[in-house]
Length: 239
Image 1 (cartoon, one colour):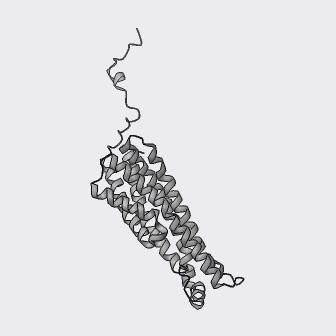
Image 2: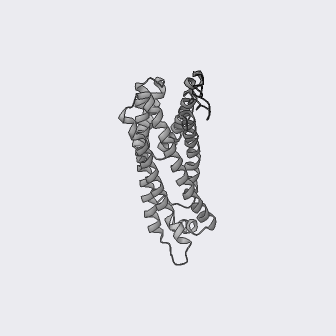
Image 3: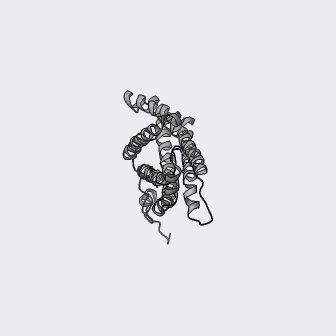
């Protein structure tokens, strides 16, 4: 596969990952408990609502698909950064950073919705305090995963800055997004929104890089004579 097409597919994978991550988190939020001040009756009502349980069951696979597409996008972004930097080892942090974010995000959401999954069974009696603890643990893990986002943004911005591939305002905005992500637990939802907007910009950048990449040269048609063979006169078998 030629590089232009590979980068284009990675870019569209990144665009799809933004949508799936948002949908997956939103579906999990319908049944999760991230507010320890919620009353016991409200918690039990959320856990035993069939529609919310179904939403949580759909949300986790959607979230996992979004993380998988994000990793695909990260490989394309790393390739673009390799070309910009001439092979700077710093670009090697891109895919592990995306994997750190994805792994902690899935773990955090899973903890948050675990009680709702258990509520499907008649053998489980939900305890509101346990649900609160699991919900807060999930929230802490998911927000900690934003550290991976901060690394991804910072590395991309640094390499693009060195290559002078971004205007000055975009560089400083990106560094601000990186700082928000690195302090994601204290910034609440602001870091998540900022990273999603940055990711959309990165997707656009990868798609533009794909358009600027020349297509691979076409392979010679099978069976076509080589140029040397075409210029060589046939020999007389009779001598």
